[in-house]
Amino acid sequence: MTAAARAAAAARDAGQRSLLRVGTIASAAVTVTGLAVITLLVVTGFIAAPHAGFGLPVVLRSSSVVWLASQHVGVTVRGAGRIGMLPLGLLLLPGALLWHAGRWVVRAGGVRRLRHVGYAALALATPYAALSGALAVASRSALASSSVLQAVACGFLLALTAGALGGARALAPWAQLITLLPDRSRSVVVGVAGALAALAAAGALIAGVSLAVHLHVAVTLEDSLAPGVVGMLLLLLLQLGYLPNAIIWAIAFALGPGFAFGSATVVAPTGSALTQLPAFPMLAALPPGLHAAMPGWLEPSVLAVPYLAGGIGGLLLVRVSAVAARGATAGTPAVAARGTTPGTPGMTGKAALSLDAAPLRGLACGGVCGCVLGVLAAVSGGPLGDGRLAAVGPSAWQVGLVSAFELGVSAAVTAGVVNYLALRRAGALAEAGRPEPARPGDSVTVGADGGHVIYLDPWAGDPPAGPTPRGPSALP
Image 1 (cartoon, rainbow, N blue to C red):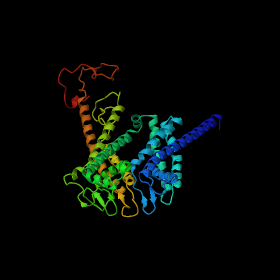
Image 2: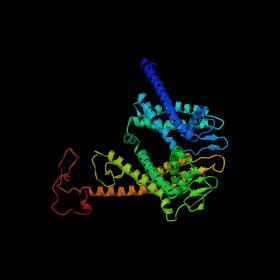
Image 3: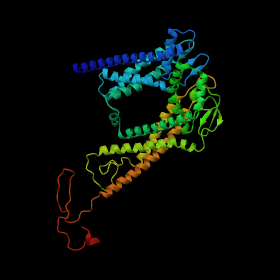
Image 4: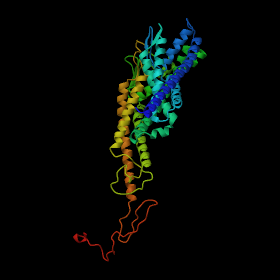
């Protein structure tokens, strides 16, 4: 090995050690900060509802369990069983901290290239996962315990995802990062984002309307709990934490499979069958018993939501492809000619996909949406003990398959129709801009803007005096 190679290897090893050191510091800072915030809430809860055996070890163990639960780590409670349906809103705290930690690791570690952000995210996620596992071991008690394996896995995945996104954002804005993707991937990503955003808005509307209709029941349940001022604030925070779960359940409801809240229960557009529910104000939107889920006239509108979201995804998919085509052909001389195909200089930039590419990308958009929604359905539910509430939430595989079909079909149809109309419009514009056939004695301009202009006579001779003969004698 030459001296230059040894120097380069030494510099690379030093950079990796520096990045790992920065990542360890950042992961420790995130853990300490998150535990401090959670400890404050736990102490407030203990003060509002005093318990026997209140002391510093109990507070620290409880804070560690709640901090791990905010990363979607289930907890096993003695006498109740496993608690796996956790509020997804709590992910905002560790996610935001890890986001900023990823930005700091990239800047402090001297990362300059986007492809090296993954190393920074690994440098943050590895020690953070180890700290999460250590907290799961340290927080074990006779009353509650968290899964060590789940703590390590969830901590690693959360830190890797949030840290990578924060690190990438530290190097460039989102508008620039999205342009780094290939045209095909970029169009599918934008289509997926549009479809999921439409579904989230519809799910929030459905959940909000359902809760507003049964608001009087929710107020009655809250009064029956008599939480006090501090307890009411903590109860409000807990309900806000479960708000993302409610939106995902509303999306599953609109898709058709619905969700369950206990064994042998279902809440779907076709009707609901529920047993007695816990005294939690948010659950007032789910009245128990056998009854119709909603008025009959509203059912078609709710079931049409996934198809509308898929149509929005297909429309955005084609528009992004068209924008990419306009950017690719900017500054290229437009030549209007018959038989012009998409992606060639003859395109006017209004359409960038062939007739079969647009529906295929629409199907891909639906498939990706199905995978994302299936994962969200899985993490939004879970057991609430070992009794009749052992099955709570939507079915992940049902939501994934149904959403992939509904969103994929609607996105493919919309993308195909919009792209076909754009291709027709582009063809009409090309025909309108097609030059008239040259006649004897006319001049032909060769070149583009700022090019040379050449005047010539294509026939290189005097025009015939009479009419042009037809038949075999007209052949050269």
